[in-house]
Image (cartoon, rainbow, N blue to C red; front, top):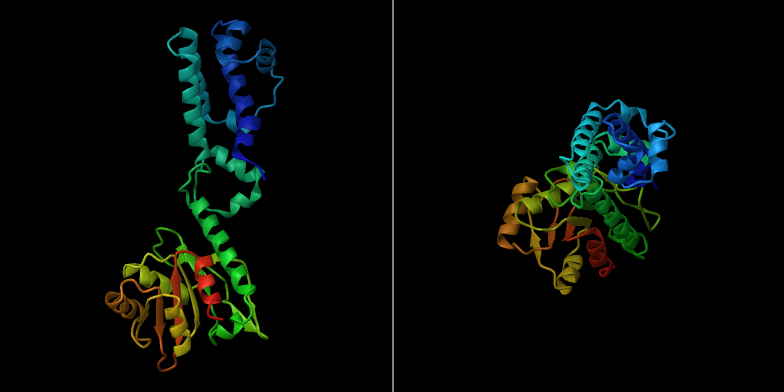
Length: 298
């Protein structure tokens, strides 16, 4: 695991300081004066100025860095800029490069797993898509462990298979919902999870969750199991609110109507139709909670 701060310290900082030290020396400042301005030792300044520090070629080729160095050198040398202001400008520049820019790319190269994420992101942003997607995947993995460790869960899996899904906070479509690729299957009496959670791999259960959210539900996770009257009764016995919808109608419309009658429903079910297997959908705030609810009815 490599932190982006390590990239900043090992790649950006030596390059930036050496360029700034050189620029200040070119403006007539002594090594002692440069050291005072940069808050480093004179020996460090000497190493920077004499090229004894390894510099990152891609940063050296970035015109924006060159422009920043010239701006800071002019201001510091003329006394028009304080070291604090120079530090702030440099920090702002670093944050820019960390958000899907050059430092972000260097970070991906230093820590290849990050390259799996195609969208730009700020590694420090607590609301970043990267953080949210990883939290959803982690939540799904916890929920799946609950199901895999629940003896008897396999008997609840319908013929079409089960799936445990969880969506991002502002989910707009299937690609914002993570699920098990290929669904959870009953394999000789045991629940078989064929792969790690991925986004965009569930249409059916994810579609039900998205339809419920579009109708006003705040649920972010769902799990489908086979329908029986007893299953619905057991869920109601846990204090859950159930709502039935028509399996032969368009799902979004049918679910919207069901939630219009029971807006607080956390269990949706349909009793089947022509070519449609009867199924129960348990909704909840996250995958482990939904899995825990189902565990209680096994």
